[in-house]
Image (tube, rainbow, N blue to C red; front, side, top):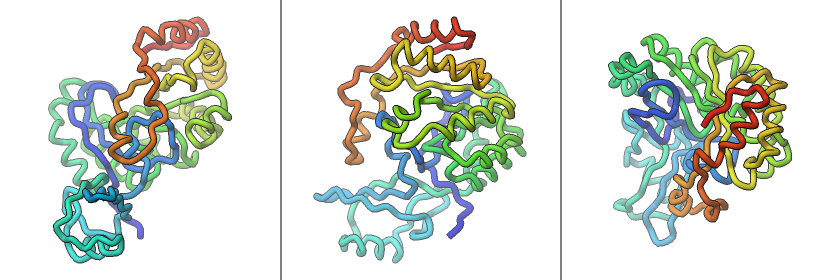
Length: 296
């Protein structure tokens, strides 16, 4: 069933890392990639996740149209909800649970974002749509962006660019800034650590650089994936070919480590040491020497 609601998993106010100024970051649920270092593993599944607090650690994935929700996206504990529990062998109506994923209308999200309009105006901030991968909900995403632009809000998106190229064309009129990941220059390595090829991502990067009002390419620098001087030289070749002028390097961190245990997901980077800004100095210098405006 088609829905006009957007499935989110978090709203972060007063964000300073997701674009210019003070921003409201809205995190959309669902991602096609399965990056082994992902700091938001709860974002990957495109369903409402219900974590039952029982001895089995039961997790239920529900589609939006399987349940009723209040205006803030929280589950209404009605017959639909209890029927869903029963289908999973849970008969206790007083069972405790955690909900990850809330369906909300674009109108509701705009009203939440507008609560901080004064901060956007005073700092040049706005709203950033992040994830997960926001482009998995392209139609509802476009509607949300239209409504934000109608209110004069600066709009940005954080994206993997793993999407049908036609989806990008739908966004150009409504986005002031694309923040796009380029995780690896090598297709085989990219596929091994994210589960998918990087071909469509590089194709979309090329079009993005030509057509976006503004863009920033980001490289999440990950040990045993893309953290070497050789990688820096190869990234430089790729960016020269694409016509990219600036790139930000993001050092690997362990902020999401605790989530993996909570969600019953194996975390393969638990033994990897977090990187600091200075750890990336050499890679930054190599990119700069090759004509790329690189920074951390």
